[in-house]
Length: 98
Image (cartoon, rainbow, N blue to C red; front, side, top):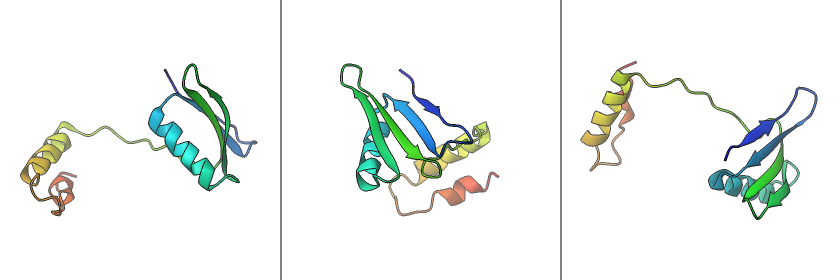
């Protein structure tokens, strides 16, 4: 199953069609809290698909570059080193590799 997002420069809304349980829950909760910004437009109980419209600026796409092997190894070592101390800032050990 896949998600689809569609929008253009002229229209103020992003249209979202999803089967993803977490995304459906988050969008439904957001729509309940901010009905002037987001609304559910359709649902298919047979397939579990839901559709939403949300105002541009309320939904974002985040593109991230893949981690280098060196950064993955540093993150793994830092996590193992600090696994018993969740208050320790692990990021310091990882950030030294940038």
